[in-house]
Image (tube, rainbow over the protein chains, first blue to last red):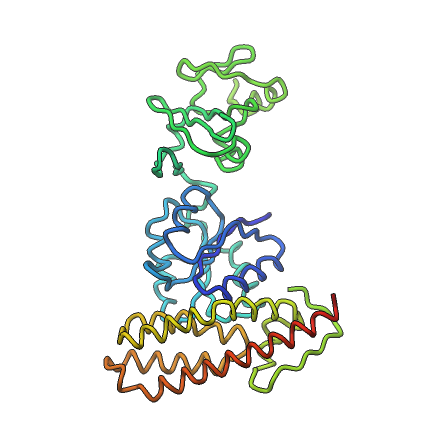
Length: 229
Length: 133
């Protein structure tokens, strides 16, 4: 399984070395690199990842500040040159603590711990909300409140019972990010929240008065996912 | 970091070659790349240290030193990293930066010498790696 990760590290050579280690590991995709907490936070709240390689001391804010403010908690491997951070690292239930500079062997050991790590840390597979960027703000949306998502070219519309939010995403991109057990793509332009479906008639899904087309090719999969007696 | 056989670059004795081997084996392309990245940011990172010292900003000096010191570890100069750490420890103990001014001067001199060594070695690595292109 490919792990999506970000590197949050203000020392360029350390970030570059870490990228190389991820590349060598083969199953870790570095989706972004950041040298400060604010930029990382903004990205991570919109782009859930499986893993963060996180430096502790950075300009303006620390890696622990990032963990405090993050809307969800992926697995975290701390990278620092200060062993004093080992104790707070355990407090934050991080998977491992890499003291810079570390060898690839040591990096591999940290990665191996990911699969045996305590499941108590919620990961992106079980978030109950997402943050979307809309109207220049980051808006928290509870997943259960989303009725459906509609494509509008390079934008999508998140529809809840009483509000609509337009955000810059493609439907394809979102399909990969929302929990698959909760959402299903029913048409090239629509993803629906399975729990919010009122009824299905012929090739349409009805959710709170909204009529959503269903593509013929998707219908068997949709029916399979419904709890039909 | 694809290790390949039959390469045998000789590092200057100031480098901890064994540690470099431990980090990268004989992936000299990666080492060259990391030297390049470090040198690109070297002056800025060093200026953060010297600027903080000149302003007598102890907290910023500690932060900048802490950030910069692993550079030397990654580049096979763990003794310079250790020197940075020792000065960091000294600054933590003494609020007055002037009391450690001699150690500071020595450290800056060591760092500047390291930069020259890194620049020289980077060029050698670049030339060495060219033969495998």
